Image 1 (tube, helix red, strand yellow):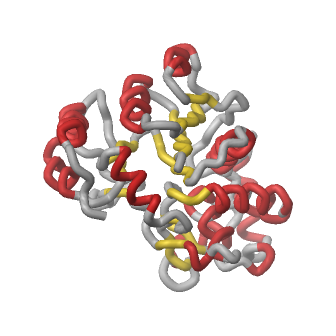
Image 2: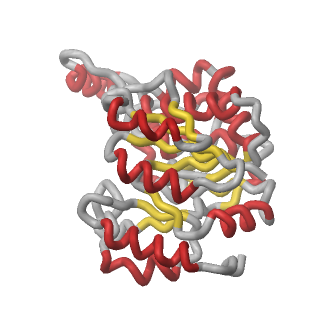
Length: 288
């Protein structure tokens, strides 16, 4: 089985290099979408690494905007167009890091070869705070003079929005690991449904629910396991998860999750070094 890792990155080439090297295994490949706002020059040396591919048709990504969905889709398309029969596609950010060895990750996925690992909650019943993301108009994806005023007027005078095609909206975290067949279905569904594309361009944070929603409303629903296999700490209560420090060492080293986010090699390299020591000294697979 081969894994295609798709990394969405925007800074810190050294941390990206360490992540890529930790992911490298057998015939697996790493595809990187680097935010178009970021110069490619400091990252060019990474293209020389084995089975590393940078997405050439890059997107300028804005936080909370549809642009991050488009960046992800371009990565998915590059993986599909490679013609390689990957068993799984693994979506990561440049701030993620494995908590298990590649051998263990392969072993786990081989035991679950038809499962899609995605975290989700139904918006209507369990994630109601996210409903304004789809019910209201958001112009986050656009930049023009008076944008905020136009957005305000749209939400005053127009009725609440509804998901097209009767889709049941579900979501939570954008990061997931799923079989290539699921990714192909997602890409094709978005390509064939202009109404959905146009709708999502006027939502906020669609990357956190568009992919789960598409699979949840398909024949793949029974294949979804409601976990994204990531250790993420939201205890700080902010808009972004906690950045791990050495104080999180024990929780990370004892976690059974496959990956964790997020890390900062500039200010907290020590905790990443502790994970490396664990993985480098591990002679046997963890129990599945």
